[in-house]
Length: 151
Image (tube, rainbow, N blue to C red):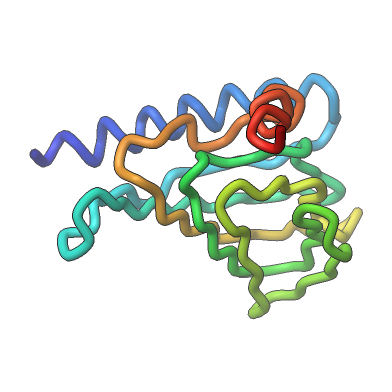
């Protein structure tokens, strides 16, 4: 039982590294994603909570992406400033202490450090159906699935 959270954290790290490692080839400056917590929610059967810390180097950006289909995400800017856009909503400039959320099925089109000179840090907390994976997929890979859902 104790190894379950470690295994899940390792799998999350591998999935996030795969996604954002590919982004590194497209962007000189990318973010670093560090798993912070993975835990089934004991009083909500079938649901899990996952937290990751996203460190953005100056000028770093994430590629457009989607998350696990069941994922509700709360994101909190720990330090610096982050520009974010979810679905077709407005671009938001968020500073340390501000937050936003992504509903299940959302497309995160913009996620980047708003500064070219200072780092930024984001805490993302996911509530998902237990076992729903991958946690994150590039938008290009997930767009075909969302198109099928709309038809």
